[in-house]
Image (cartoon, rainbow, N blue to C red):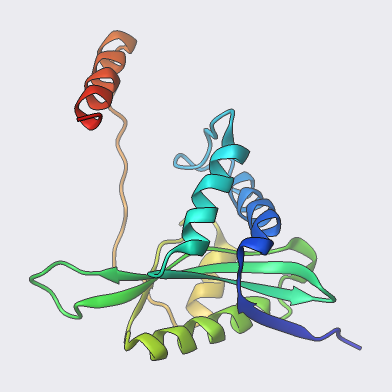
Length: 178
């Protein structure tokens, strides 16, 4: 018999589980050019970031629980588009992750059900997300949930020497302090 799955909006009391799952997501993509280089203090930064996200009035992190254990996470952000485009706002889905032993058991679909309700409550008629092009499972899951590919993200490294990079960082710090 399958244990019952529940989905709810996360609270600050869920922060430990959110950090664990979202760091697991980053580690799963350790060979991805965007996510391969985690900072040494990633856990501390993760707590600060996710605490702010859980507290934000513009976003909600949903968690899926089975037997009182958090097995999935998904973040919804009420996002403004360009002032020259419609719709004016959409739901940006990010940081979706389901624990290994819980995959292909309806967890992501249940999280998306909560996300759709959240969109309806906010009057948002569209969802968008980015997923790794290198993950066949991720591409298949999002396609099965009705998402279509409409854009590509491209990346190009620019090789600045360390002195130039240090100066640029210093200048940003000085100008940001005003």
